[in-house]
Image 1 (tube, rainbow, N blue to C red):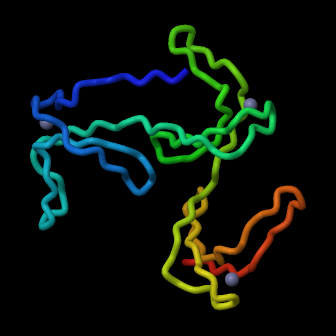
Image 2: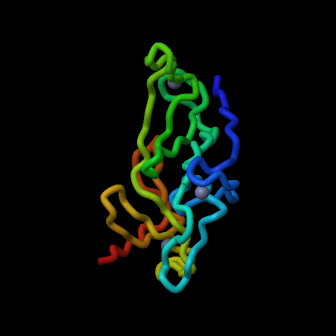
Image 3: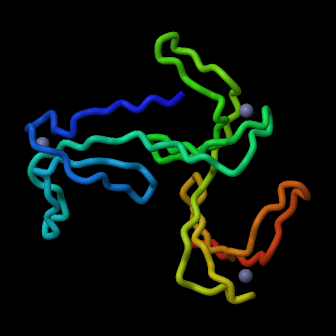
Length: 161
Ligand SMILES: [Zn+2]
Ligand SMILES: [Zn+2]
Ligand SMILES: [Zn+2]
């Protein structure tokens, strides 16, 4: 079972209330102190520098665990990495032990949609960033058939420097 800790939304540094929950580009969530503000001239945050990182609720996926058949969850770690894990897997902070199914699948890379068309088939392109930080443009119709173990759709790929 997931337990949600309810904390008071007050800055522990200065006692001001915390601002709105902001979602970063990597899917992490944070709250800044309301005494902090963004200075567009210096491109820095000024005022109180307290930042509260929020645990991102795992997203339930429409996929089944290959080990036990339970639903998979999409989990975003604090460093912005994504992984799929089995929903029966839980961590007991008291015994410091994991229980349930231990299936984990790290998701390498991220895709962002681009406002560009594929030169080969005219479908939108996506920007794919690998886990090592390399970037490429590829056709959004390109996919991977897990059963046949081969690429499907348009194969247009353009690596970026
Ligand atoms: Zn503060
Ligand atoms: Zn499982
Ligand atoms: Zn294409």
